[in-house]
Every structure is written in structure tokens, then in C-alpha cells.
Length: 119
Image (cartoon, rainbow, N blue to C red; front, side, top):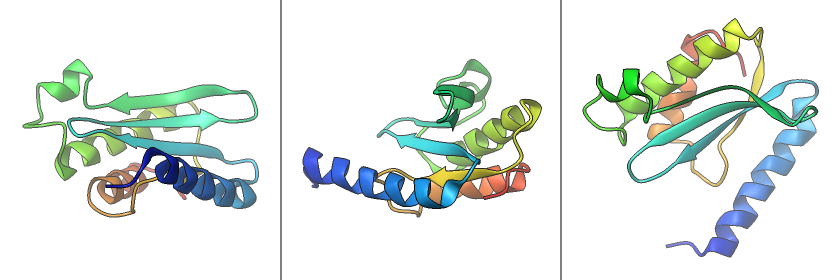
């Protein structure tokens, strides 16, 4: 199990790489807990969240078996993509944070891509 310090260092390293290539694009960030998954589209220049979705929302929670699998992550990815498009966002940069790009994180990214966001 990774220590808190190494996890934080990995997240900062990923975020530093993202800021180099982001340009004017907003950031789609992911937080993954053991029971749920959360996604936000963040405007770093203004410092506020443009769109967000999670497995804790009532409309998703009732239709999902659990909030901790790839199907739930895909549903969250599709929902955050819809909300971002409604807010006028077409291009984002994907911030995986300290998580490896596979499993739930990859399912969320793929669903957001299918929902109309481009990375």
C-alpha cells in the first residue's frame, strides 16, 4: 500500500504534466474511493467547477448495482460529459490523479469520450 506522501507526489507529478499540455482546456478530474467514484470538470483559471457527477446522485444510485465498478464509472463519465457539453465545454484534459489508468478510471474516461468530450 502506498504511503500518503508518495500518493500525493504521484498526483502532483501527473498534474504538472497536464498543466504543460493543457493550454486553455479545462480539466476533467477523477476521485475514486472504495465505494464510489466522482468526476469534475474544473476551470483552473477561474477556480471553479463547471460540471460534476458522482455515483452518490439519486438518479444514478437507484439504477446501479454498486458505485464501485466499471459500469458505475461509465455512467458517471457519460453524465459528466452531458453536463459539460450543456455548459459549453467540448475539449478537456484528463487528470487521472494518483490512480493508474485502468479499470474504473479508464471506463470513466472512455464513457466521457463517447459522451462527446474530446481529450
